[in-house]
Length: 269
Image 1 (cartoon, one colour):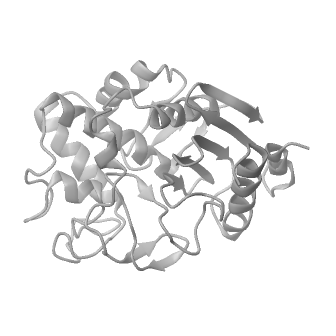
Image 2 (cartoon, rainbow, N blue to C red; image 1 turned 180 degrees about the vertical axis):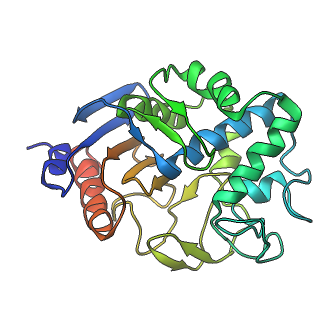
């Protein structure tokens, strides 16, 4: 039994998983059908924004969102904007407040410089260059992507060996505003709650949705639709997962087990 076959025991109707290295897919299990990515969409949106930064359309440290906030604050969930709505809960840079609305404001700001729709910009900047032809953005840039696991695997491969914004990626997966605390949805308050530029960083968080064997440098995202993508530079591997059941305690229990089994099977001690 391979590590990926563990998903056959999960309480879901459909699960698709793939192990990826910089050269491509090492192993895959489950159907390659399009499923909602939920907040894993934020990885696509972050890359779309970083491509705009790389082109000079926007600057990381220019004003965007609520007063005193910047593009960097919005990407790092430190703008003070709540999860939903247009209020302000904290001064920029003081708290890590995970925010769908912050990513929507970010997309709106970038479009003032590029024009068009954010779905078009994402397709042009990320999906088409990476060959992710089965994925589309429907609705919010925070949570509206739909696509197959083969495309999520391509995203993992890109993040292991960056081609879109290679000069920006080291900063993007480095902790922004170190020491800031906050709640990691589904896993409670984390002190610190480390985050890069749109990429959640594992560091030493506990509890966490990745495995005990994942290195502290692991980064990625999970989604409410029962989806995740982690990228572990220490192991030089990524793990992509899509399911058709919303995140709940079942996922918090089985995801770390799968992650550790994959790392063990692929030689990570």
